[in-house]
Length: 309
Length: 309
Image (cartoon, rainbow over all chains, first blue to last red):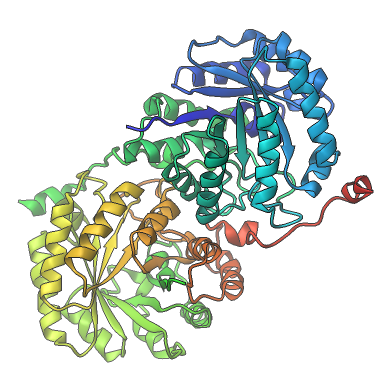
C-alpha cells in the first residue's frame, strides 16, 4: 500500500483570509485535535508581521501552547529573516518559505520582484544553516490569475535554485485553482526526474472543481505528499469567487477508499471537521463531513422490505 | 484529439427533485439554449406518471415545443410500456430505461424487485422493436446507499442481459456518489472488454467531491460518453446531504483544458449556466460559472506594476 503523507494547512492557509479573528484557544484546540488524527505535518501558523496578517498575530502563543505529538511535524510559514528568528525560537520543526513563480503575483502578494524574493529567502536559508529543515512553497506554479500561463521551465528553474541551496522540500502550489490533471501529470513527472532527492509536496485548490482530479493525477504520477485544508477553507484574495484549498478530509476519504495508506484516522478527522463551521462561523465547502463516507449506509424505507416479501 | 460526447440531464435528472415547479416555458427555453452549445445528447424530460413526478408532468408539451437542432439527440426517461408509447408519440430520438443493480434501491425507488424491473423493461425493448434506439441506465452500479457494496459481477450480469436484448447503450450510474477512481477504472475496463459494441456512458455524482476525479478515471480508461447536469443540479432522495450530479460545465471545462474535444462551446454554455440560479431560485454547486475559466484573468493591483518599475 502506497503511503501518502498529508500536511494540514487549515490554521495557517485556511484561517488567513477568514474575516473574523479566531480565538487563540480555538486555534490551539483545533491543532491539538488534528494532531490526534495521523497527519504527517501540520502548518500551524505564520511568523509574518502582525500588521500584515492580524489573524496570525498569536503565532508565538500558538506554537508555545500546542501539545506536540511525536511523529507530527509542526511547520510554520516564514516570510523573512525576522520571521525565521521567531520560528526558530518557537522550536518549529520546519520553516516554510514562500514566493511566486509569477512576477506579477509575487509583486501583488509580496511586494517584491521574484529576484528580490529569491535573494531574501536565500539569505534565510543561509542564516538557518541546517538548524531546522526548510521547505519552499512556490506559488502559482500552474498559472497566475493575473498573468496567465506560467511556463513549466520557470517552475523548474526556481525549484532547481532552491534545491541547490539545500532545502529539504518544495511545495508546488496551484494557488488559485488553475491546474488541470494533464498539466499536473507533466509537472510532477518532470520535477521528480529533475529533483529525485527533494521532498515534493503538491498543493491544490478546488476553485474550478478540479481539486481531487488533480490529486488523483499527482498520486498516479508518484507524488506522496499533499497539502490539504480542513473543510476546504482558504483561498486567494486575487482570485474572486475562488472556493479554496482542496478539502483535506475529502481528499483523504478518496485516497483511503482507493486503498492508499494515508495514515489518517478518518473517523476522528471527520469529527474534527464537523466542528469547523462553529469555529469559523459559516458553512465550509467540504462534502464528506456533510454526506458521510461511502461506507455510511442509510436505512431503507419500510415499504422496500415489505415489497421484498 | 479524443472526442468526448456529453449528455445533458439537467431538465430531467436535475429538475426532478427541485421543490418548486419550473415553468414549461423555462424548461423549453433552457433546452433550446443548451441545444446551441454542442451537446451530443440532451435528456429532455421523463414520461413517468404525472402523479409520481409532478415536475415533469409537461413532458409532451416540452417535447412538442422544443426547437430540435440537427446533430443533437433528444432522449427521454421511460419507466414502462405506457411511457414508451408516449415517448414514441413525442418523436424522442432515444428511450432511456432505468433500473437499479441493487435490490433494495430498486425496491425503494421503483417498488419492484430487480427481476420484475428487468422483465418489464425487456417487454418495452421488444415492444419498441428497433423503431427507436434504446439506452438503459443502471443505477447504483458503484454502491447502494442502503445495501452498501454492489458486486461488479452483478453490474456485468445486468449489462450483459440488456446487451443481449439488443439495446444500443448502457449508462453506468453512480447514483449517490459512492464511486472512487480505482473502482471506476476497474469497472470501465471490464465493461468495455465485455461489451465492445455497446455505447457505454458514465454517470457520476459529486456527493463526496470525487465527481471530476471519477470523470478523469473514466476517460483515462477509454470512456467517451458522459452524463452531466448543468450547475451540478440533481441528487437522490435516498442519500441525505448529497450534492448532486457532476456539474456539466465544470467537467467540460476540465476536459477542454486537458485537450479533449468535447464539442461544446464553453462560452455559450457558461452563459446558460449563469442563468440557472434564476430559473431554480437558488444557488447551484457548479464552480466554473462562479470562478471563471482558468483562462479568465484578473487585473493586477496598481502597486504591482509600479513596483515592477
